[in-house]
Length: 284
Image (cartoon, rainbow, N blue to C red; front, side, top):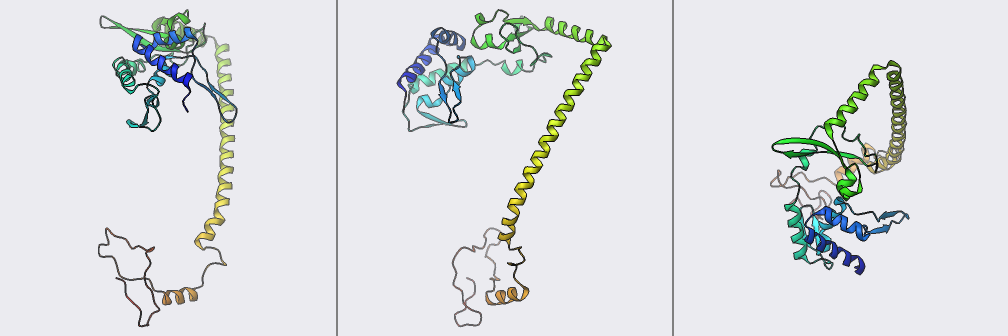
C-alpha cells in the first residue's frame, strides 16, 4: 500500500538532488522544510525513525531500488511486482550522479593515522570529530572535523574543524604532565585496575551463565538422541534377534555399476522375498 504523502516527498527529494547534484545542499533544504525520515512503531511499541536528514540516510534513500520498482539481491537488480514510486529513468540518473561524485579519498582518510580518532568530541554539539585532510600543492593538511557539521551542514556547528597537529600536541603535552605527578599517576592506575577487575568479573559471570545454558541444552537433547539411536537398554536388540533378522532380511551384497559416482537408493521400493523361495530375486 503506497502512502501518497510519503511518495510525493520521496519524488521531491529525488528532484532536489537532480537540481543541486550534491548531498549537503539537499540536507540543508530538507532541514529548512522540516522534513524528517520515515517514522514507524515496532510491535513492541518502540518508536523508530523520525530523525533529521543527514548525508548518510539521504544517500541510503537515494540508492533504495525499491522506489524504482526493483529488488536488490547483493549486487544484482531485479524487477519487482510492486509499483514504482520514482521514474526508473530518473532513479538511474541519480545513481550515475552519486557514483560520479563519490569521494575517492574516503578509504585513504580512514588510514590517516590520527591518534585522537574516536577520542575527540566537539564541545558545542557533543558529537564525535572525525579525522580528515585537505591537499594543496601536493601537501596534506590534517584536520579533525565535527561529524554533525559534516553530515548536516557547516552552519550548524561553530567549531567545524580544528588543525590535527595542534590539538594532538596539546593532548600529548597534557598526558606528559600527568605522568610527571606520581600521585595523579597512581590514582589513574588504581582506577584503571578497578575497571579491569569489574570487567573481568562481568566476563566471568557471562561465562558461567553460558556454561549453565549449554549444560541445560545438552541434557535436554541427550534423551532424544539416545532414543533415536536405539542406545536405550530396553530398546537395544539382543545378538540372537539381530542374527535372526539379518538372516531373514539380508542386505544386498552387489554394488552399483559406478561405485564412485552412484549411490544405493535405499528409499526406492524393491521387491523382496524370503530366502530360499522360488520368488527370491537378486539385486538388479
